[in-house]
Amino acid sequence: MNILVLNGDPDAKQTGFNRYVNELCATLDSRGHIVKVVELRRRTLNQCVGCYSCWLKTPGRCIFHDDVEEILRAYLMSELVILASPVLVGFTSALLKRFMERTHPLALPFLYFKDGRMQHVPRYDKYPKLALLLEASERLDARTMDTIDAVYKSGKTRIFAFEATTAKKPSEVADEIDNSKRFA
Amino acid sequence: MKLTIVNGSPKNGISNTGILCERFAAGCTSIEGNECESYRLNHLSAAEAAGLLYKNEYTLLAFPLYVYFIPSTLKEFIESIQANADCRVKIGFLVQYGFPEAVHARPLEIYLENLAAMLNCGYLGTIIKGGCDKLSQTPAEDNEKILNGAYEIGKKFGETGLFDPRLLAAYSMPETISEEMAKHIMINANTHYWEKRLRENGAYERYRDRPLIEASPPAASP
Image (cartoon, rainbow over all chains, first blue to last red; front, top):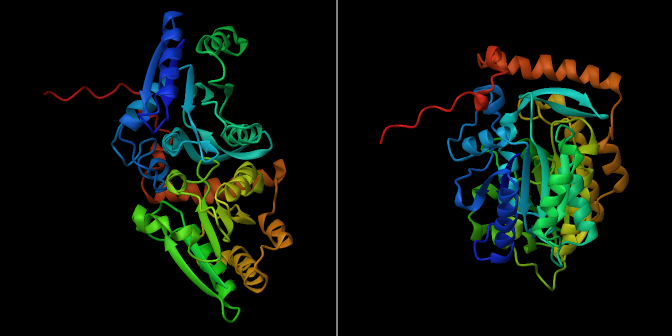
C-alpha cells in the first residue's frame, strides 16, 4: 500500500515523537508498504489566505508555488495518509493544520448534500483514507481526543481509517494498518 | 467595560469576519461608557500580538471556520501564548463561514470552551454564524438579518457583560437543514454565486480541472 505520513511536529528537538514516527515508517517499510514521510517543519508551506483563487481563478491550483503542490500530488497517489502530530493546546499542531487548509484545491466550490449536511463537491475521483496519529501525553485526555476526532471527522467527504496514539507500539499501529478490512 | 476584539482572519483586505466584528462592536459601544479596541492578527507582529488576549477585561476572538477549526495562523498564535496564571479576563469567540448550518461548528465550539479554560479565562460563549460567504461581496442591505443579529448580541453583551445564550442559539440557526432546503440553497449558491463568479473570472470552462493528477512538469535544467 502507498502510505504518506505527514509529520506535523513543529519541534525538531522533540525527539520522542519523531523517533516514534520514524520507527513506525521503518516497520511499515519492512512489511512491504511504500512509505513516504514528509516532515512538514522542513517544508515551505504558506498559510491559506482564503482568496478562493484555487476555486475561482486557477481551478485546482493554489496561488502559492511552495512545497504543498508536491505534497498534494503524493497525497492523491496514496491509499492512506497518516496525519501525525503532538497535541498542542488541546489540538493537533498549527503546522499540521496549516497543511490541512492547503487541501482546499482538492474540492470544488460547489455544494452538495451528504450525510445530512452541506459539503463541497470533491474535485478528484479518488482520495486516500486518513488516519490520525497523536502523541500520547498528559495533554491528551479522553475529552481532548474526542474533540480532535470530532473536528477531523466533520468533513463528510473524508474517510477516516483509524485513530491511534503513541501509547501503542509502532508494530501495533502497523498491525492495525495491515489487518484492517477497511483497506481491503 | 473595555473589550479587545482580535480578528483572526488570515485574509487581506475586507473580511467577512471583520464585518461581523464591526457590527458586534457597534452594538457593544452603543451602551454609554463601553470601549472597544479592534486588532487584525495578520497586521501584527508576534510580539505585538502577545499581550492582546489579556489586555482588557473582555476579549472577543473572531475568525472564519477553516477546515472545521480555527485558522492555523490563530492556532499558531495560541500556541505561542503563555497562559496567564492570575487571569480575570473573560473570553468569547465568533466564528463565521459559508455553509448555512450551525452543526459544522459544534465540535469547534467544544474546543473553544476548553481553550478558554486552558488560557485561564472565563468563557463567555461562541457566536456561530453560517451563510456568511457573501457578506463582503454584497451590499449591507442584502445581509441585514446577519448584521443586525451581530449588533444585537454585541449590544446585550455591552449591557450585561454576558453572551445571551438565547440570542446565540437563535443567531446560529439553522442547526441542520432538510434535503429540500438543501436543494434550494444549492441552486442559489451553486448557480447564482459560485458559477457566476467563475464566469466573471473567465474560469468556468476550467472549473473541474484536475491539475494535480496530470503529469508533473519536467524538472528545470540545472
